[in-house]
Length: 166
Image (cartoon, rainbow, N blue to C red; front, side):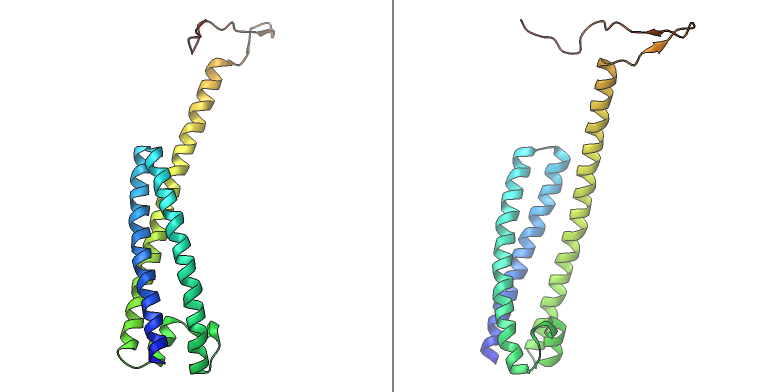
């Protein structure tokens, strides 16, 4: 049983390291969103995808180890959580699992918060772009005005917004 618990702690340690790396990348991503650095932002996205794939593989390993632990503890896989393991195992495993639970919760909460902020920055940028396009559209396609007789007076566009090369 101790060997299986050691395998689980190794997997959890790798998960913590990858979540830590993911958090740092997402923090950098926020800075690139603010700076409007698209190339760097794209690199962050590629790095995030790689880390997420690693985390998925680690999660699959964790699930298989939890399956083996459930046989020893005579319980269902879905009932085994880090809290359950910390309560069901002796020291040093009990405190190790409590520590990993605390670390993982902290990383997940931080990642969720930064992702919310990043989403807000992106939505604000999109709204600003929509308003800019609407402003340019209004300038280049003026709305008709009505004269006192009720007839629509079409305004003639004067000048150009963009110089066209011949």
